[in-house]
Image 1: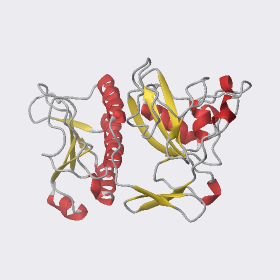
Image 2 (image 1 turned 135 degrees about the horizontal axis):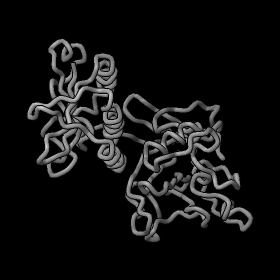
Image 3 (image 1 turned 90 degrees about the horizontal axis):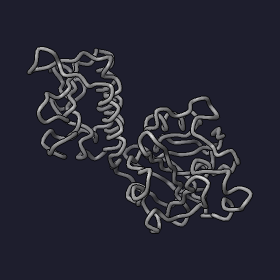
Image 4 (image 1 turned 120 degrees about the vertical axis):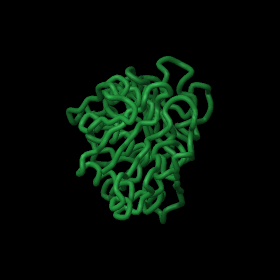
Length: 303
């Protein structure tokens, strides 16, 4: 049996749930296969607000079967594989409606209301996706990307703003066109080609739309037949808009804000070396939520 508690409140009891047997097995298997997501309960942020997901194994045979601590945290900013921990946390929070709410303090258990659930998912989407990784030169064809137990090959194209900024095309292509390197002249939208337009406008919805088009999450490797496989990043202005970046051969990141010219600088005019930390919030809408990294693929459908 597995109890999951969202450590987020100060005065109110934290929402706490018991997962059913099948879901508990799937979650524990995923954690056991990615042990770097596990952090101690004393680690990470300890102030007011969200402090991570507390996971409690309630039987000794479960502890033995999965070789995990009895109590630990994930997605609290302190693990060695925070991006995966946040992914598991999002899965747990999304599935709370199917779990059994419990409480050690109140007759009526605290539940995570739909609006709070949405806000929490948006908050998780804004957290840094910290991970152990390295990039080294590949043998001719591209770049090798590595994380624990995973190595993916990608390609990096040269920065070529002139291709996008020609008068006949600049107003007809946007950031999604630029990220996927598809000049469709249709002001492409994630999911439009595959019938999954993102709504509401948040990390989860835009991610689902892009995956529907054929993108892959970072470190979900693509075969050589899908060349060129570009590394891209996505951010969201919650409820308002999304934006994409693409890593370039020169080492910086390029992007194309709507129908404006493609460029490699942020809102402050600085070269973009990291889409997670570049200036995305000094204008309106404010693209506060960093949603993660992805790979584009040759077979992607973009429209």
